Length: 167
Image 1 (tube, rainbow, N blue to C red):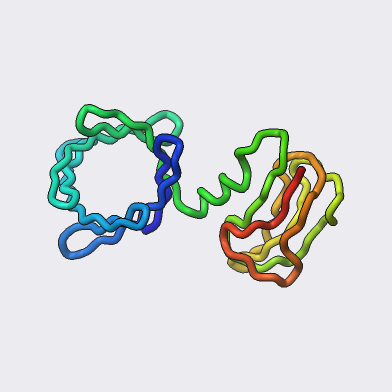
Image 2: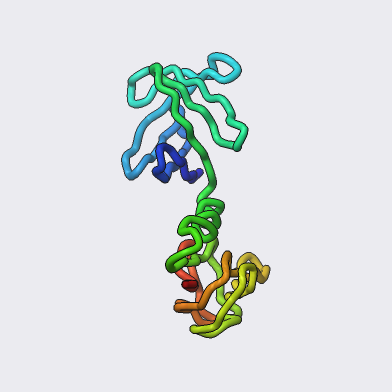
């Protein structure tokens, strides 16, 4: 299972695999061996690379979690990679400056609905992607001018590939 964990303003890619001894967790390219035991409603006893940790996980109202261990409390959010890419393609740069929009999943470009230099409004379709046998219209999240289109009809894209830019 692959996840994105957002902690302290950083997005960290985590892969978790179950094995005969517990779990193998890959964090930022480093592999760690974990064994986890539930010790209460929200308390977990984790042995990570041979070192025992008591961890308390409590849900936050915004859908994230409070994670407490060793006297430290940290806010964390866990999302799947597809949701993460969709969020990154939507938010971030505010109203000013160039806004890059990326594919949120692999697919094939069916149509480009605008030309470079065209003025678009928030919510206007710019690119149509076919993914999983469905057509998905990728819209501009804000009004502006199409600065660049990075794809063409018929082209295959991967999740995270740059589709277009709005200024």
